Image (cartoon, rainbow, N blue to C red):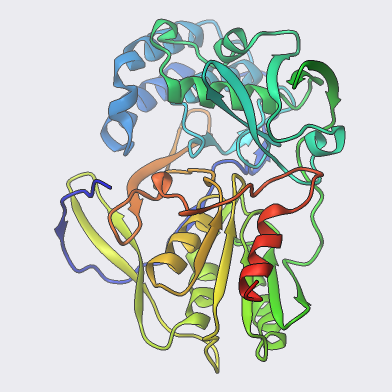
Length: 413
């Protein structure tokens, strides 16, 4: 493993919101534009190279992106059209942690919160490696291991090009992966039809919406046989009531011999105001859990203090998967970095860095993007870190493989 070289400074503890850009906040009304879209495009084209933490990998096609956007802006006649131009600019950054704070029914769904499949390219085949439980894909019967043949009658490369605009002749592996997965999430107004190969057979499925229906409770919990506790977060790491709900659940786990923390359904990110008091229940003294790294190489280690009236000091297993996003990823590397949790599962959502916003003055729309990097304490970028104990974490409607393994591990089997 290669570690980066940093300069370290001491910074005061700050409160940050680690919100995933996959959770847009409002819908954009249509109607006359009445603003200068070109001015906002120029702001994006100037500010993104200066402030976006991962711009270097996108620099080659950025001039083409901006030129295309400027030409399109001159022809825009509605707010809907303006939003479409801005969405294409965002597409060309191919980063699931970048997004606009608004959408309409024609907008593409964002990943990970608006997706239900994850596809990786393996030896020129596009293989399903994760299926979100209780989603449209899971209910249709898509399975891990299926190979993508087509989506809405488009082959994988053509599908990717629906989300890649500038620089189509230099489509690298990361960009193609993002584009295929983003395209399969679909647009809010369109149907989704997928064709997959399973063994020697080819099957066609019509997929319902990818979003899942979650319980009203911010956390759910239970105790399995042989005194193994289980607490699951229901995409609630940005909800201030989650801390008290977690504390109530943890009180019921006080006599257990081990605890499973399930972070597999946290795609919309959250807040350190929620995550840190939860992490604090597992330590007896102030402990670093995550590293913030700025573009100039300066970094600081963020620490968490003990919280609650007592500390849970029994073994902990943390479950993660493709829909563990942003603050969920921060908690996972925090448990690992503090040596207070054994992390098990698959690659996470890989929502890179911590975000900031640029408000575009003419449209009133905000662009959210990563402005600084976040690392595991060992120096691994958070978006590259993955658990060493690997198992299928998101298995659709099939058996919950990683949960069964975690229970067995805590029961000593």
